[in-house]
Amino acid sequence: TIGPVAELTIVNRVIAPDGFERSATLAGGIFPGPLIKAQKHDNFSINVVNQLQDKSMPLSTSVHWHGIHQEKTNWADGTSFITQCPIPPNGSFLHQFSAPNQTGTYWYHSHFSTQYCDGLRGPLVIYDPDDPHKDLYDVDDESTVLTLSDWFHDPTTVLNKILGAVTDNSTLINGLGRYPGGPMSPLSVINVEQGKRYRFRILGLSCDASYNFTIDGHTMTIIEADGIETVPETVDTLPVFAGQRYSVVVHANQSVGNYWVRALPNIGNQSFADGLNQAILRYEGAPEEDPTSSPGPSVLPFNEASLASLMNIPAPGVPEIGKADVSINLVAGNVNGLFTINNVSYHSPPTPVLLQMLSGAQHPSDLLPIGSVYELPPNKVVEITLPNTGAAPGGPHPMHLHGHKFAVVRVAGNSTPNFVNPIWRDTVSMGTVGDNVTFRFVTDNAGPWFFHCHIDFHLNNGFAAVMAEARDQLPIVSASIPETWASLCPTDNPYTKS
Ligand code: C2O
Image (cartoon, rainbow, N blue to C red):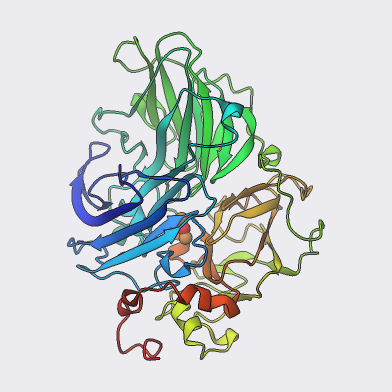
């Protein structure tokens, strides 16, 4: 665990989280990376130091703080080629930002190539000691963080050359798991005391897989989604897409024993034999052995349409689809094995979009990469529709927007919009063919913000666009840019001259 003022060193190290040894790219040398633990209103000052040396994987890096809005600090978002040049080996980058009013469960990961699949991902939690809603879900312990991640035995430099779906080798819960035919490697154990109530934070840190998360014999009351407190909703299965987070309250109200915690992936090996895709919930007093519990009872399904934010914030703008100030329809597809949004496949520009915008020299339509940048005027209600035509393979696609939380006015699997008490979050599934997931936000945060599928292999193959927001307010952003920021970019860069 580290605090909000810290050094985060990125190194290569050989690890065997599922019993198979491979070289990985790691924050702090561990998988997942260290928990960054902050309190509400803390200022963050995190120096990312690049000490990568393993030439079989990318040597550059950048680290993004997923879900943190970076209000007025777009430059600190950590997104290679959008908000900064990548950090070269032996270089470093100091991220200074605050997260006013943000609390809850977040994460950080590499935003360079598919580097987070090689290991660079970890949890970030902002605690609120004075949470006004504490009584709603009074818990005895809120220290448990459960990261769900897919794990690959080959580096992504190899995997990226595979055409078609890349399947993982194992599911790691808190960095431990097993793979089919592998050794009986240790599994994560979550210790509880009978009669107590726990807040578990569940994080989807995967590169591709989504999970159906369950705990044998126990229900879960959802109280948070992507940093937003929700109206408590009790379920016994929880879908977790890449990039999403939930907090749930679990009451240890069963008999003393061991219970399987299951993260069933939507791709790869879906067996529960030999502890695959599982961790152990262990009551105090139970023997130290594998559970023999069975799944279920599965009588309280998750219903995305009934998720509502506790703060009851209505969606901004006129409550009718198509009636926002700005409506943008983004149609996902694929051409020649690359993903597209509105027929354009995203390629990283040679110069970060923020640097292009600050140079001021470019006409909006000239912003590189051409066709992938959408200019958004300031202080308007933007509505994004994501019709699922089925043309983008490998779904459901979890779509993530940087710089904002957004009101999901139409969720997958439900055509009735909800403008009254929608869930606000930062990563939403596009659902299946026929869905038209729709969300809204207000353009109150200047800067270029990446919008992309959080399946990292899809992002790497062009499933992305850039929302270039409130250009006129960029001086607010530039005011806090440290001198070291532009120095990461090559000096012969035409944009760094001015
Ligand atoms: Cu979780 Cu663009 O990132």
